[in-house]
Amino acid sequence: MPCVRLDPADEDAEPFVEIDPTGRYGRYNDLLGAGSVKRVYRGFDQEQGIEVAWNQVRLGSFADDQPMLNRIFAEVRLLRNLQHENIIMLYNVWTDDDRGTTLNFVTEFCNSGSLREYRKKHRQVSVNALKKWSRQILRGLNYLHSREPCIIHRDLNCSNVFINGNDGQVKIGDLGLAAVVTKSCVAHSVLGTPEYMAPEVFEEDYTELVDIYSFGMCVLEMVTCEIPYSECDSVAKIYRKVTTGVMPAAMVKVKDADVRAFIERCVGKPRARPSTSELLNDPFFYGLDDDGSTPFPLSPPPPPRFTSKDMPTAISACSSPLLPTSLLGRLQIG
Image (cartoon, rainbow, N blue to C red):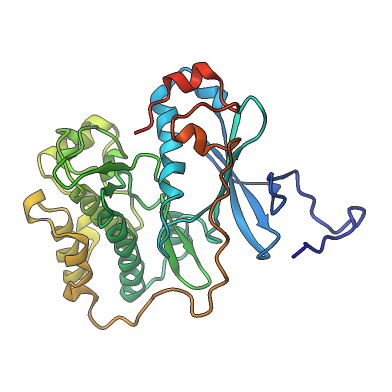
């Protein structure tokens, strides 16, 4: 069905500064967020009439940084194969020109930003609301951990969890550091945000249970509005406390005994740490009403469009006319 567009001369019409190759998604000049890797702009899906997040990465900036390139492509590769109500969804991905200097991918947009930002804006939140957010994060993690092979997020924290404030729906994003491992394997890289990293991550020998530890720290931040170990002024001090089992100072601010006990279960020793499925059945969540998907969801966008000229060619490590041969030669995608 063709889109109904306003006259370009209409002064009230907000112009797109860019349109994707399909003509479906448009990008506005509003910057939602920026980091060392990507910039995220507000976009619009003309078919569904909904806002989206337009992610943009200048690949040339990382031509000599193979680990970073692997991280960038890993996020896209994972997202294109995931579909869960508590995981950010990928809609489309492509490179912008024949040289492939810019990677663009359109994802779901959460209108209230990260859970960290949202919690700081709304200080008066009941324990039940915190439980609902926590349960949705667990559902997303359970989906990742139940995949075959298993997916470990490895960088779960409240800045990588997003929320729609109008309905309270929570979604996990930023899968750039995620690892795919078989049930008989463990991961062996020290990656993540130090304040949320389980002790065994520093020892480079861990399983998906490191995400449970990070989840526990997320719950702590949600309750206290304080980043764990904010009393430390260096990564070295955080490392010493984490590896010696010293809890964040913020734990003393958790007055609810049930909440405190739940957090302590999540951040316990690896063998004592519960799985996502065990936590979802924990009495901590008893009595909550269901917080499942939106009652009347929009029809989902079609699967991401991938052609011989698009980014997934590079993701599969095949020859691509859009990425420099020298760059592709150094890119290792499993």
